Length: 226
Ligand SMILES: *Cc1c(COP(=O)(O)O)cnc(C)c1O
Image 1 (cartoon, helix red, strand yellow):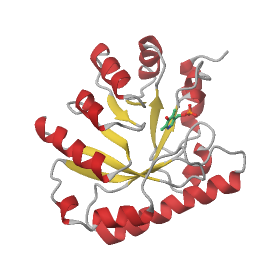
Image 2 (image 1 turned 60 degrees about the vertical axis):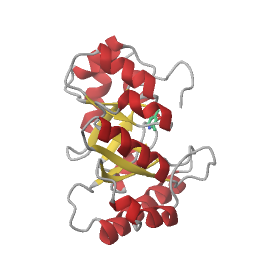
Image 3 (image 1 turned 135 degrees about the vertical axis):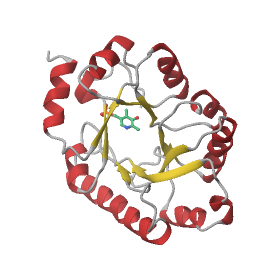
Image 4 (image 1 turned 90 degrees about the vertical axis):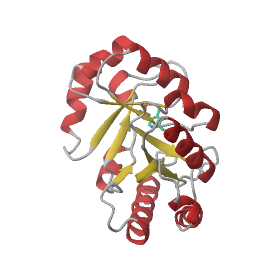
């Protein structure tokens, strides 16, 4: 069995330097996280707010902690003081609540808007229409404690690579439209978070700027904790 260090070394060779690697550490131990950190990785992603808060409190390293999973409004308070980026903003209501918690903490929280691109009802995210409606509203413009840094999407879990590619292309397309209509002169709006262990190469070909990778680094997770 290759070690975490070897897995990361092999992985980073296949990722262009401008694409950021989010090491997905959900379900992994502090010891495993520290091993990954020691290979020069600084961005770690978790999909549960309480697990994220717990690991942040126990690991005293300059890690950029990202929230990548569906976030319930009543859990924002556990991560609002330190989270570096929330990838999974999937409703206007959630964005407003993040803004409130950010304000309480006297900070601006960077966020990505999650777009629904898959053919699976279990996945979350905005439709393109919902995105445009929100971004055009006065209420959105008045949110001063969040900053939108781009979009995130998850492709359908499938072996059909043409379908995966189509879904990533559609996210890139939506990104381009949103950028030109709402963020033309905003250099912060620059990230497309797409690609996981099974599909990150296709995602990079289709314009990903951030890949979120867990099992290729740490091995298969023992229990499903999507
Ligand atoms: C678990 C997870 C990943 C990483 O999945 P792997 O297949 O283990 O690389 C990426 N993004 C999100 C939102 C996840 O929940």
